[in-house]
Length: 268
Ligand code: OGA
Ligand code: MN
Image (tube, rainbow, N blue to C red; front, side, top):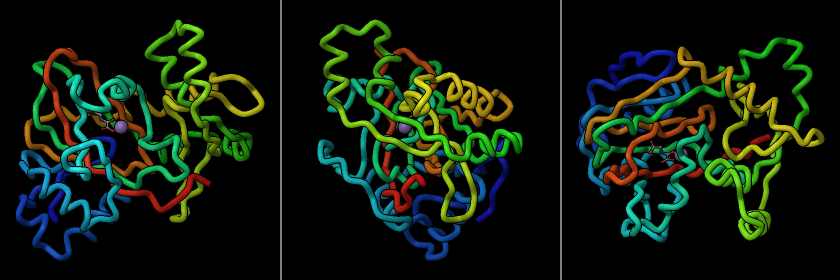
């Protein structure tokens, strides 16, 4: 697999076409290894259809199923009112880890561009391994045992800053999830767990530290911004990155197709 660096992290894969995705027996292993090392893999204008994208996903791991979609291995990301999840995609604009409210977040995701907005709609990535590495030794020691509450309310508050009592009650009825701030991975690496789902550090009632850590990890020099062409496929390591969608006109029919690899490592 020939690759080229994309910037602060991430690589473009130069010599893979859609047929090689399914036929090259060494490719899945090489991709998983490259994903651990580089965080993001970009295949430009690959034009893999849903069947090929899902089949390649299955070669990389076990897929999360989305029963609400015609192909349950491919979630459509769009603001089309017919999209069963349209109302939840607004929060994709904020830095997040997919499945951060789950016991075990997704391992990785494959996202391809099908219809683009005329302007904006890029996707940005930032490394949460780097976020940990940026801490001073003193901070590493101070934050080693911090725990963070992740809530649906924290996500919704961004979209609806002045909620009604009814909204608050509905949000409060959702399950919450506590995670350590520092994720000590099976690989031996460490990353920070923050993003839009993070409500506050347990015992502080404050989001201040979470905001500060996020801001340090997502300065422009540390962000990989991908400006899409139709047919591009990007795979990201969801355990060591946060990502977000850049703004675009939501009345335009931007549509992305996502295939998600089930996680196998709880945040601990
Ligand atoms: C996602 C996501 C960002 C985008 O599909 O999980 O966050 O740019 N997408 O559509
Ligand atoms: Mn996402």
